[in-house]
Image (cartoon, rainbow, N blue to C red; front, side):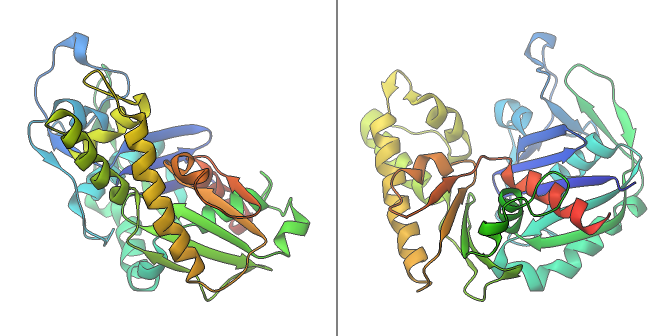
Length: 314
């Protein structure tokens, strides 16, 4: 029986899943500090008693580490978050792993990323702590891994059933474009008849573009603005320091949607189905003038990786 762990290691968010157990945290680490017991939340993670990971780092670390390194095998911050994810989901067990890389980095980074994952057990044990629980010593073992171009997980989540077999037979014969919106990268993955189309590419047009605009708008409105990694909370609530910023959010994402539409048009290909995916996909969906567009949720990529695992390791 296969035992898969699905990892989506993004610039802004890291998601993982194994057997219905999920990990979802910002891809950020920070120096740990003593916290009052009342301030410790159930989704707070600490790595090796040294670093807060994800939400704990965003909320409480005075010194934060937020990597802009495109190379997943070399980025120290993403490695800490990745090891926390794998340790939480696998502990000391042997697993098979499915993950992805941006399309344009895929061929260059695939081998070193695989080596990093397969060699993880050789680095020895480490500790993680969740919420008010005790430290647990972990040493996950990645037996096999499959690295795919980002966006393929979303495509497979749409096309395949939970058993890893094609569930949408008609759609599988059509041309599908997955518009996978990440924080820094936009993956445009074309797929038809079991093949990834040559037009597929990734470009540096992500949520960060909209957030940079939003910071400017908020600055003009209030005289100051939150850091870019703090904006998620205010975008979700639509409020900043008592100000309604919903119109500013809409304006920023409408501009991003125009940039994305230009990138899609530059492919010079007509597609039958457009899958719009990513944590912020809902903010651009209505502004994308595309036929047969389908909004996929933030966990579609991770679910799709799980289906790819079932298809690969029967």
